[in-house]
Image (cartoon, rainbow, N blue to C red; front, side, top):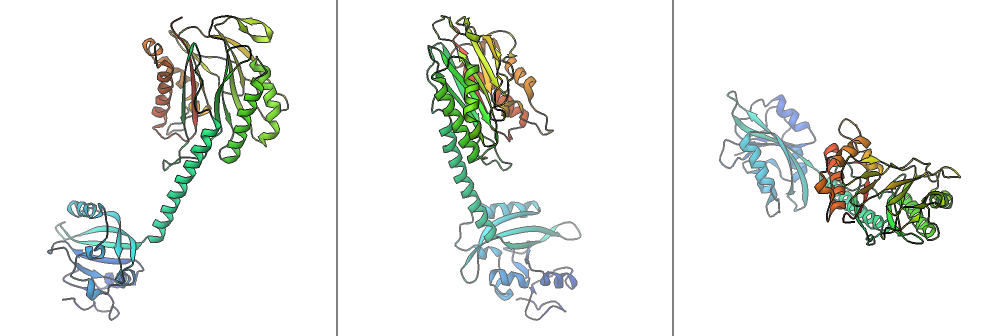
Length: 419
């Protein structure tokens, strides 16, 4: 039978059954707090409640007389509680403290989300005799978290759909080349998808034969960055139809999109790939370039890496000015021999600026080291471009511990090795 409240406690509130050490001031304090508190005797059969405070009654609707002597699982009757009972049992058996959230039903039938903080009480010999449970109604918080999760899922879906409009659904088949693309979006600390990025890439036909391949990055994230990225991509597609050289093409596009940048800037790496037939192709400054040379032009973008079929990788290209900041874009063209079996690796700064826990960037040195570690056998044959791209992603993941906070994009172009 329930015992009377301890001396000094207000009549009709708080009750105990059996011995609970340190009543008096301790019980008075428990009865004064706003948090629901109950105590279970884990040495008795079915581990009954032996104390509940007035806040317990306010939270659950059950007065002490209806709660004491019962196992607290009566609050979950008819509810789907998942693995919560098993987690509570594991804490009790281990004599450990912990927090478990599970649904409870009030006396009036209403269901609320209950955050249960459990702590053991030990006797003089160190044996656990009772468990104190502090209960908190977190229904509003749980609803807000569910709404947040739904909103983030919707935002991630919108970001993914928007991102897909900024890049080609697939790259064209390039005779004489193999291609691979990898994109890894930025993530928040909780692992959810960040906002849409300004990364962009494409491969376009080049007037008179050959191809343009480009990769770029517009500053910022979100809808405005996405809109600017779309303008940049389509400006490039339009201008590429009438210009054979990458330098003039970048300068023309820089003038076209400057107003659309709206204070933002963009970086771009543009390659002019020769035709696959091995013939001559329009080169730098109107000269003829051999069919195994690529022309590289950079507008403020990280330098691509030339990964030969054998030998160490190296950075290629000369830095130029950003797009969108200055009225005129300064671009330098550089010829790079791309022989059979060689690869060019284009990337956004999310690769080289990837940071570890000490905020140390991977850098160009880390990228070159990752590519240099690829054995010659991995640089040849079907799938070589994909293996190279995956090796870079793996290096970034190792460096960051899998917690990359920035978007990164890779475009690998491999010259067929059977020529």
